[in-house]
Length: 215
Image (tube, rainbow, N blue to C red; front, side):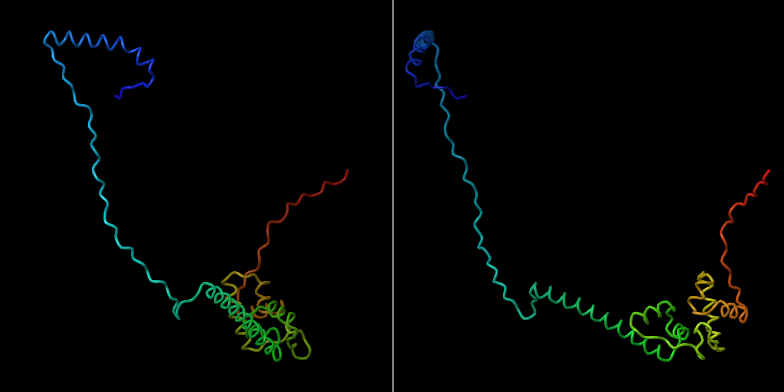
């Protein structure tokens, strides 16, 4: 514990009586044969030297020189935009080729024949024809294509499609729209090939409450 030493003269003088009393006590102690051991004061011991590892030589990496194979960041973005535009252009080209193929079919086929050839529904063919300004041929003798008489080969193909429609659960109305035939032709195909196509079931009938006779 470090002692506080004041530099104020008045405070130093105030301690004179105590120092005088302490000197008398020391003298009396020495006369009685006592000894006073003077202890060594604290000594300053410098801290040990800090170990500093030797500095290693800094490795300087050579500056990167762009080569012919490196692609800058902006070039990557530009390339991605170009590829996106190429995909859009390819989709537009495929769509145009598809429409042109349907247009050529419309020159020699009716809706029913085009449905059989392409696998598209009549509604899809009608939308393509309206949007792109072409028309399918009508049935012979100016009749409605839906009422055109089917050949044996066409009837056999329609029968196979009806069986597949039945397996996937299409209703009779949906099957007729897919084939592009009339109700009469549809029933004729069922009777001709012995296809038991289920009819749509009706929902629950409303309750009937008889009216009370007027009194």
